[in-house]
Amino acid sequence: MVVCYSHSLLPLCQLSLTSPLDLVTCLFATAPGGMTDMTIISDDMGANSPIVSVFQVCRMSLAISTFP
Image 1 (cartoon, helix red, strand yellow):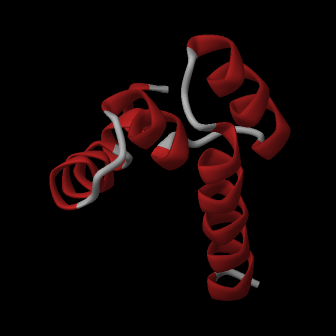
Image 2 (cartoon, rainbow, N blue to C red; image 1 turned 60 degrees about the horizontal axis):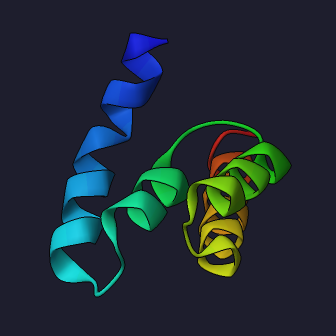
């Protein structure tokens, strides 16, 4: 589990430094996990849920298209 989150640390830092998004939204946008789970949890934690869901869809689409 630590390995999974360490792979999302670099995109988290890049996204939070280069975008106007807050840190919580960036964390849930780059975190590995279920698309619906991350959106629901991010809504509970006060993050921008539509942004998180868009990033999760892009992340999932990229993973599926890259690793068939």
